Image (cartoon, rainbow, N blue to C red; front, side, top):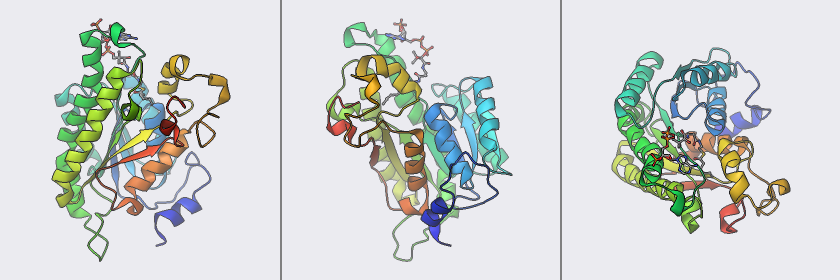
Length: 295
Ligand code: HXC
């Protein structure tokens, strides 16, 4: 009754702790690509902890099923399905996964397009196929995810109509979130491929918001900064992090981000608190990108 913030406050111990609570996001189903990754699994944990069920999509069968099993432990009764063997570059397999998720879990209310590919390379070291590979995974993969899930999101938005008597907001259903980055705001050496791919993703979210907003959907990007303990940081750290030992002291907020920071922002966007946030990017980076090279 006291909304998402009350719910978060009550559970603000750790999303990792098992709970019986079916809270703010009860009866909602998340479909997430890249859900077995460090950021994706933290986002999924938080949403499952707050009541959602989830379907995790990944390329590796083993890793995806193991992650699903682990995440299901955060709430008694949680249904978390791991569907491995799915590459976001292959639309048919993604579509089959979305159909299976909707069939087995009953709906798709939230989507996170989190699958991404990255490596460090200067433009001179990028073959045409290397550039294309990242565009294929990040940008085309996000488009494929939209195509596979948007009909379900539209149904969800219709089932969960606007709760706000003023006519604003969309209710907690029909939410699409892409995991973006901040590189394209400034350009980034050694990340030309990723910067271009993420710029296109932000643009896709804007168009999705414009076309599907009237049906009650929201579409946003979440742009993490330097998040400690992630694969991205591991890959980028040696080349882009000027002093890995400073733990992010050069960032205006004085530290690297945590996966919890990203999970909390995701909860915000998917909860009633985010009802009117549409067609935009939420940057969660401690103002790092404003100090270029602050990572
Ligand atoms: C230059 C490279 C390269 C490198 C691969 N390629 N690694 N070029 N430098 N380090 C080239 C290959 O030579 C090939 O081109 C082309 O890229 C495709 O490589 P494959 O290995 O065949 O591709 P594939 O098996 O599909 O693997 C995709 C991948 C891989 C992106 C290369 O790393 C992967 O699967 N990554 C998924 C996980 C991941 O990257 N997670 C990190 C996300 S972090 P040629 O011309 O030889 O055929 C993230 C954070 C971003 O996204 C922002 C942080 C803030």
